[in-house]
Image 1 (cartoon, rainbow, N blue to C red):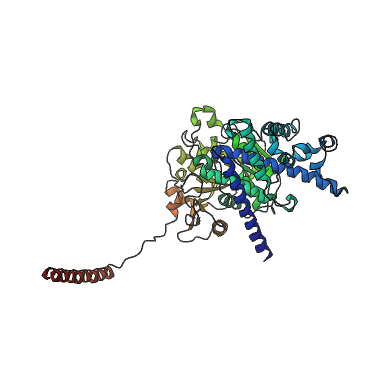
Image 2: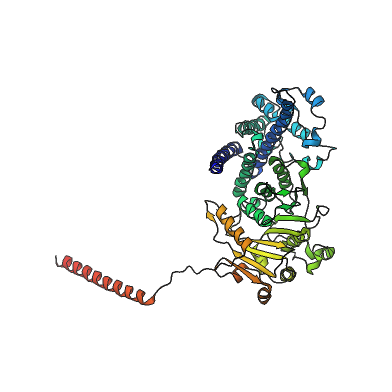
Length: 526
């Protein structure tokens, strides 16, 4: 009962947060394109978080030492430099002076003619505080997309300052509660909500890097099913980090020994992912988000293997493929005997993940359905994966789950420690709740899928556990529809009954026509 009350309270609070934060975005966006302007909302949201986070860090330490009235926001910069900067960056990864805290900047924002310049300098100082320390790469460039001098904010300094002031004061009015009471999760949820709303308004460009939380939840539970402990989790195309963070949200009770690892090619998304880690209270020394092309320049080779890999790579994008003759010798791709086609990089991402997967690990990857039946090099790679018993399960998801695309994607689950030479196929295309813009996976839908993944009890029109021999007979086709028969929902018609109904209808029509003719004759006689 207590859990239900807590859950309801969180739902109400989260809904209120979502309303307020979207209202701010809507109010201040103005003539600026929302997809560009989100950077300012998100960046300043992040600025507020780290300001309050470091304030609470100092306040707790001082109160434990006996100074119950201490407030870091009220002391001088000089005192902070002398007494609080030393050793802070080693612990927190960054440092902020009292005068630079969100709380103090927002107080004077309305009358500050230098607001945009002051914010630029504050952001530069926060990033600069980590230079020379272990956290330097994790902090560097975090505010790069929050250009407070940009003409996107307005043509004059006054216009820029007005917009920035609106954002600061709007974000200041949101009541996030006390961070030490774990409301930080609500803060992170609000952050992801804002990204998801911009993604839904941005079409494909948004969907490319945002994986809806319900899909992230499913992948997290699939890779952790039956496990009580993993070494670390990895996403080779991490976007804004939502898949990695679902691992933290779903499995706080599990031990993820060595943290969260991800690579992202896009600079904006790379910054978002690092911010998102901090927002969810993952400290800099417990994550490694790197920027680069995962297929050409993988940056976590020294950290592999990973017990859990979750990924939603871009669907069927172009890559260099066999134009680079060295890639066929790359230890990630060589065992399959073929490179993924230049026009479809899907299997390059899949083989990369397989190579980075530990012997006892599991990978769950969102895939475009075409990769399971297309011929050529992709079939050769499928054959390699099937013959070596790396494919554990293929799940058909409902359509319209993702922002910017209505296609019905699939989840490919891989493992290196399978005990049976079989592949599980699940048709979850009907496991969804319809909402205004997109379908979603509800908790009961996720449970249904994960329970079937766990128990492997064949269910008509839903799942089959198929011997590899049958897959070979089907020319290595891995489409779920090949193995799980769709339910025929068409209405069955008894032709004899139908004919009787037609006879009755024809008689009624004849009677009606005769009545009408009689009425017409009477009218004519008059």
